[in-house]
Image (cartoon, rainbow, N blue to C red; front, side):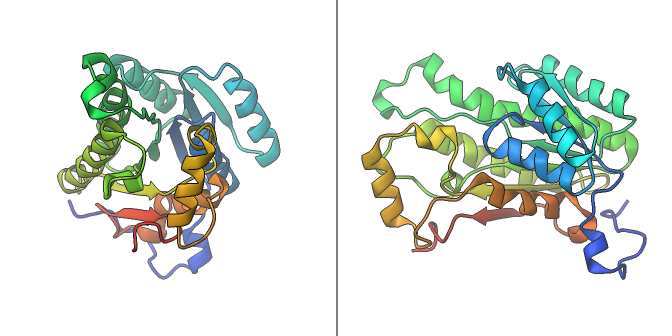
Length: 265
């Protein structure tokens, strides 16, 4: 079966970006990039499952976005590092919403630690979320997509997947994000019969992961960004809508870098 093609490739271009009628699930959807992705999906017409691990007010966040957009938004608690737990949550979403069109594997974490100080636990922490978590989320989604005959997986990676950030030491984060990108590319080839798979690699974002860093690190990063500023997570939601929509149905296995030019010099 060839890669999915929309019924009318000549439909007016703006209509191709609509997510009306689509069901989307977003891991790590209660804060940071994930929160804006949930909002963007709903603004484009989708009903959204907001998956979270520890954010206690996630149900209230989902209710607020639902009120603002008029779309059905529901929060589900799940741990992406547990194959069984994330599979159960993804399956529950598909059952309660009737199907599942798009899954966004967005949950992530980062540890700054010199390589020589890692032990088994600290090394595993980032890898279990950033790499294993993508795998288990993808596997659960892929089984549903294959049964449906159509689906769309989007992975939140990072510019750290294609370069080594300085001056911080974060080898586990960098390596896990690189692995996640290659995992996504591999799935894009393996799943052409029933799903598209793409990545988005953001640069420096105004999220909790970044704003809690020391001022001297922020100053260093700013000096290396040709764009001259840090990105607001809300500036990413349109890119996710593009990948989730029928506007790019021939696009699979890509890694869309959005970084204000950071990776160019």
